Amino acid sequence: MPGLYMLDYGAGNVRSLVNAINHLGFDITFVKEPSDIALADKLIFPGVGDFGFAMRALRSKGYAEPLKAYIASGKPFMGICVGMQTLFEGSSESDEPGLGVIPGKTIKFDNTTKAVPHMGWNHTQLLKKQPNGSAGQPVNYGIDEDKVYYFVHSYCARYSEENKDWVLATTQYGDEVFISSVQKGNVFATQFHPEKSGYAGINLLKSFITGTGLVDESTVVTKAPVKLDQDTFTRRIIACLDVRANDNGDLVVTKGDQYDVRETEGGNDVRNLGKPVELAKRYFEEGADEVTFLNITSFRNCPLGDTPMLEVLKRTSESVFVPLTIGGGIRDVTDPDGTVHPAFEVAGEYFRSGADKVSIGSDAVYCAENFIASGGKKTGTTAIETIAEAYGSQAVVISVDPRRVYVKDPKDTTHHTVKNSIPGPNGEQYCWYQCTVKGGREGRDLDVIQLVTACEQLGAGEILLNCMDRDGTNSGFELELIQSVRDAVKIPVIASSGAGRVEDFVEVFEKTGVEAALAAGIFHRKEVPLQSVKEFVKQSGVAVRPIDT
Ligand code: 1PR
Image 1 (cartoon, rainbow, N blue to C red):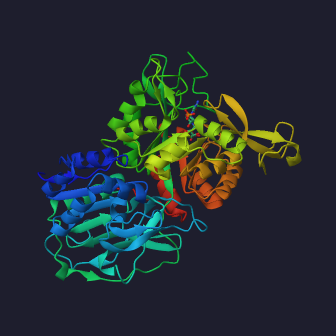
Image 2: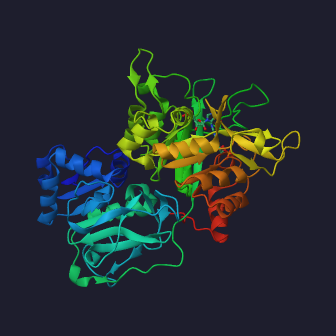
Image 3: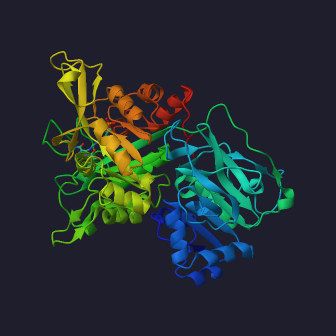
């Protein structure tokens, strides 16, 4: 496709977008200097993270005026996420003015009624339609109301009298209706990420790349958005792959029982449940809404450039078009030659290799301990703060590895206790959840509520909540733990550890209200297929993403 250009101002992972375009059989050229923008016949402008960062980057690199001129020239333009938000006049996120192409400002979602960021798969309501059989570029660019698309953002633009002729689609999250796509003349943009929205998103990119990019406006019929009684947000089902080298040095997907990944019989080998890239691809095709890789031996030192997970991510992101998270080893790393790589540089390597989010385990515990010890002072130098600042909070997941510590009486400890349905060894009814580091090898004097609330204040965007007592047991999720964390933070929570039956997913969604549930063993061992989880959850009345082909 000659003339297809991408404007990347350095906001993180554009690899997935390039991969999606390559998957369609097209190449894309990067804008390297402001004068390149005018060379484009079609321009895609993706963005993630902070509105102010994006606008300052556009202005300091000299892109803002050529971009406005390109849009005014009438040549096809597509914006994605912050690339759509910058078209507005501004944002309550920053004092930096936007490009001012569309009237209105983006504002933050209300987090008193739902988790923020809005992270996950949601529907759209198309406000512009054409009669069947209209020729030329379809006004909806392939957006389908029956499909769902992947969103990740905390700020949104609202439909108004001033911008109504721009609004192609709206989406409802909780009680709020926001603009999820705009279109007018040569301009098309989405708040969601088509490159992360499975085949539904790939089709949309295809429509922009292969279409004329110019809609016959005389055929378009518009309407106002309708607010529904309940939102159209779906709960995510995540497949998790714990990865490490086995004793022969091969990288394998493994799975522990309460974090012990070695066979109990035979040679005490590391359990081998498959190859990381192949399994990730299988789960994508089976309908996983996200795939998470955890490098579980990350506490061993390895030069950053040799980290095997970088290659795994590069290869996976070529054919898996849902969000990818990588955990394990996200911290300051010192190479054997003494070179120090700060955590945000380590994270940057992963984002450039295809990750959308990084998950921080041990280092988050140390950050939280220091934060609490200092009386809640932010230093601006922790892994959580530096990665969130550069790539946005939505890219920072905290992976928690807690285990139960039983107490006779909640007064026996200063930690947050919960009443547990499983009594302790001496009949204790209460426990607190102790945070661990180094893959559960070391317990700390920090409870899970202290950890998650500190990490939220430091800027984390999501919690991946494991439970060592449940891991690999197939006995169901640890509901008391999950409920206490869901109640303690306003960011999304992923329930993990213990899934054994399709009913466990419904139970965790209905009883705790978490945004996502993750499982590993049952999927790897093919005991419970991913499709059957989705079908059962849907039949039970909890919205999930339909399997998309
Ligand atoms: O501390 O930032 O380097 O991160 C290390 C990461 O590796 C952490 O996210 C930690 O959870 C993970 N990890 C370390 N050791 C193990 C182990 O198993 N020996 N895996 C480990 C943790 C837990 C899950 C698992 C769920 C679901 N695995 O993520 O996939 O419990 O399992 P199930 O459905 O089979 O019950 P850092």
